[in-house]
Length: 186
Length: 254
Image (cartoon, rainbow over all chains, first blue to last red):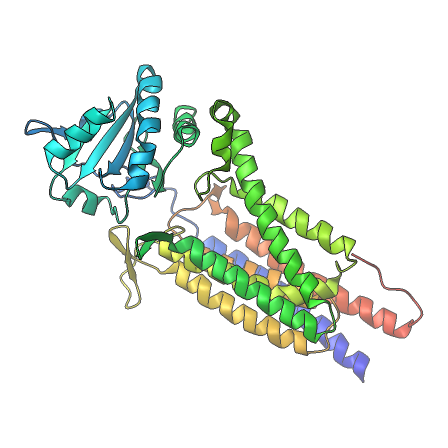
């Protein structure tokens, strides 16, 4: 009797295998992506692999910087504020990378979040920082880039596609370099 | 999507938190089931805990080795805490290898043990699916459904939720299967078979996929894995029937 029950379980397992095989293949066939038609262009979004949303940052002296104008360079967009300890802790590393990789079309864009131009410039002067300063005066760009904690850093490739995002910090110089090297090596 | 949570000035990465929660729950469940079945529950949880630590260290070591040129100038920065400088594949390999070696040394690596940890693994995978929902990773195709979620600027299939619910269901099935008198190895094969088939169904709604000859690779692998697992279950039962007829024959180890 017990052997009979076990035999039926063997049949059940084999039947399930056949059923899953047939249904699985059929579903894989039915649900295959439509590669015949052209794939739709990726929408700009703040996720890895998507084109970075086009934004205009404020800049010192009431000027402006657009992200589009930096296409053709690897851009490290670092959202920071002078009151944020991990932001301050990674500034020297970002500055060093900006200097070392400048000749390889890599640029660090430090986006100060909602502080006055005077405060941001004073901080950068005191710290002897030479990378490009952008100002997110009203916090709208931070909102668009879903910056919910400082620092947040986006690594954008030469085509304007987001390749990595680092939430929090401080980032070390080797970490920043490794992210940039990965982009340059692609 | 809620990748970061600020609590008392502390920034918490919620996807990581969900994954760790799934892992710890799975580990607790596995060691409890193991103890109920007369195994050394502490050894099971120790293997999981040490495996986790080895995995984290392995992931960091892998990342540093992969970027040796950058780290050579500041080797101490390899010790900086953080979740960014990790190579996941290196972590998986190191963690699993460490747990396997530990369990072999304790002479615990048996089909019975794999059955015991199977429901816990399902919970861990459910934690990872919850983590993917929080980070917005592994997102679904666009769809206007009553249960669609708004993610990456569009209404989409909540594939992470589909996977999460499926895995809870699978964990329940595995829990029930452990209470039946099935041969050793059936529960872990059920996990592989059911999870693989879940991926065949759910991955049809994922927005991003690696393709092979126009088909999603995960679906193809899923079909093969689910069929193989259920055929293997049939094979295990057949083996048991044979050994029932020849009770003196020793059972083969893993």
